[in-house]
Image 1 (cartoon, rainbow, N blue to C red):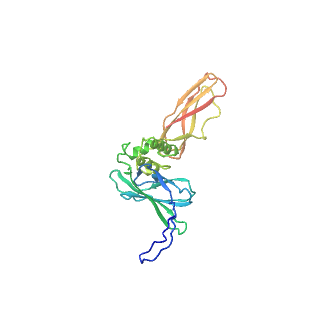
Image 2 (cartoon, rainbow, N blue to C red):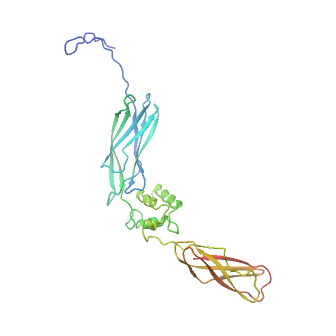
Image 3 (cartoon, helix red, strand yellow):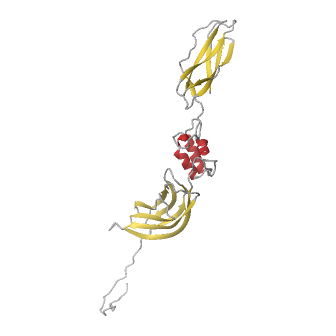
Length: 306
């Protein structure tokens, strides 16, 4: 306290006694500034690229806002995040994400976080008030988008990249996407490459890159066989195995038919037969029963090839 009873104002009038009041400022702050990762051009989703940590005031419960400045500016990037009301003395991690559009890049482009601002909402007026400004020089890149027929950082082209993670039917299922994500986390592919794979997730990769992949033949042995219920030693019979084309292309199929019974075993291989997509057909082998074949029950098994 100080005695200013003799103080005068500019008009030479006495001001009167004034007491000094100690004011404690809001001590909220930001720490742990860090670039998270690069982001891809023409992105399929939002990717976090920057983070920091807000420390709330030690005694007031307030809502905070974090703003960042990016140079050059980046379309599709978040630049403002609010925390919601934070209890005093607590912390919160803040992440900024970006989903850049097609920017027509011919190479990767570098962007810089030049400043970070911490604001607080005045609970009396609802207005945002700047508390801190941090000068920064944190850089990240927007990676040039992957395309079907141009070289990527790790593959001859985007088609080859997709084929690497696709199954034999040219589709990228969960296991292929998980493998790509694991490779990205291990540094084996870039964020632009994993994003290109994500665009084909759950799809036939030929819908992304036309004529990129030829599905493998696929089929199954169905139930509608043509097999006699009995036969006589010393005669010949035809055994028809039902085969269904369950793949995406017309294909040639053949079967190995294994016959086993009392003191006897043989394998018969059929000729190849073309079956259309989604169709069933029978593939035949001829069994010449030996004259000395013993009476009994014989088991017929088949293995399908395409």
